[in-house]
Length: 235
Image (cartoon, rainbow, N blue to C red; front, side, top):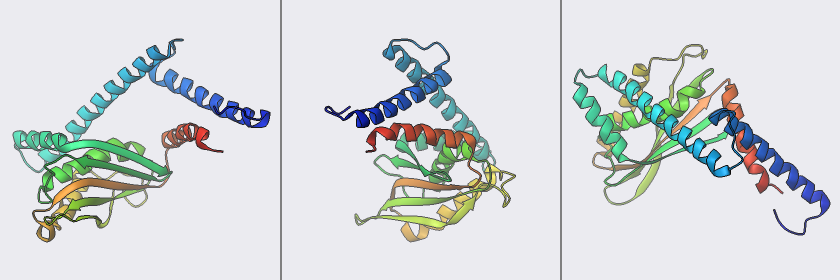
């Protein structure tokens, strides 16, 4: 908190800080249970332990789901696991942004040597990985998404572009989620169209923009928590 504040300004800061603390206590209680320690380090370690467990569970679920969808395209399980392992080895880090209710932006940044545009299975799986982690859990109505590549051309130039029109995740009234195998086929065919144009070029980043209607309660809760963390930045 800045020094030499007027009483009125200090009251504003106190309310902001109190809001953040209350929000954090509720978060810890929800994630780690009712046993909240007076030692912040204990609470933090409990939170990190839960978070690591959740990430591992999510990765296992993602691998299981993707493997099932890929097995519909090939009966060779060894091939599926080889592509999956290569995909995870290529991902440097994953980023999630949700700038406003109804829009989710998620992306994978890849490691060098970057995957090539003709590695269709790998790029399709990477797209499904983002959808399973961030899009499907937020669906509560109609949903669709677009795919964008940041590409390094063979002569060194970097370009970013969106691949084709939006791909639906649900039927038009949003009451039924489309089979993941159908969504995967849309992704695969969408990426495949660009092989001939950009063959030999590398993909630095893969991004999805997910457009949602009927935003779910949990999504709004997440936005409210993020709002509390922004309070200290406001005048």
